[in-house]
Length: 349
Figure 1: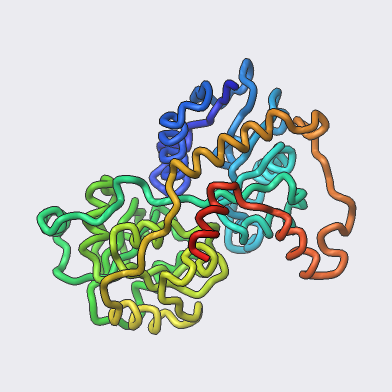
Figure 2 (figure 1 turned 90 degrees about the vertical axis):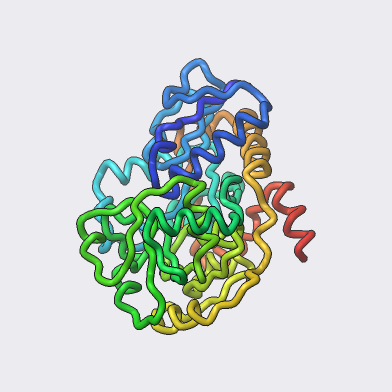
């Protein structure tokens, strides 16, 4: 099988870029078939767009799309991407033979907001990059000197080129705290105007691993996420996590973090300052397993019914919401995780 993988988002410094880079590398190492980096699927058997911007309205071959979240649809008043072009992207996602999502929370959103049938949705979680693991004292000290980090600090990781309402970085910076706050990620003018914080800008994976390792705790104030990769990365580096209590983090972290009410950022910071090591064990899920599960999706896409290829297959009117939230949960229960993930869940149970 010859798969075209749209690698354009791999250059992105945000989470979508991390996803594309890690998955692409793991797929190459898997060596299950021919994989080419291209946004043009002609002369290929399957096309995978790992971001919504690459989804095609009329793909000449079975198309797989990774849908990271549906925040712009859930919070239309807070996001600008609501024009015709973005609506066409969602239409393209609806036409995909398979839709990969990182969590059951996003799966339910895809069911309710895009009316994608559950049999076409596959939950494949993300993982910490192999380089993101606990580092030595020498490496921690080196990165501390390089970025002028204090001996003890709370840490936040993510993109800050433009303000994202759900991330609540500005509110976090204003919360009552005793420890310094370090913000890691690409910055914009607004983030450089935040007071009483240390900004590192973009860092390498090795530097990020050392920054995670040296942190007292990771604070994660988001009130909505599709997955929540920084907490997974922090745990992989042995760093405690304190986050807002939202459904996706309960699902993904499975009791490995201290969760605080969404409307209590002062409480979030206080809990982070009181965090203690050792942190709970990291998640037992790797990019290799994610790659195997993804290649299984390619196999499924190749053998999918022809009527699903390049044409919108709408569900019957009222199929999702005919009896309220209960029908959504029943539909979501039909979304089974890949065998690799199910074995991990069974082991943890």
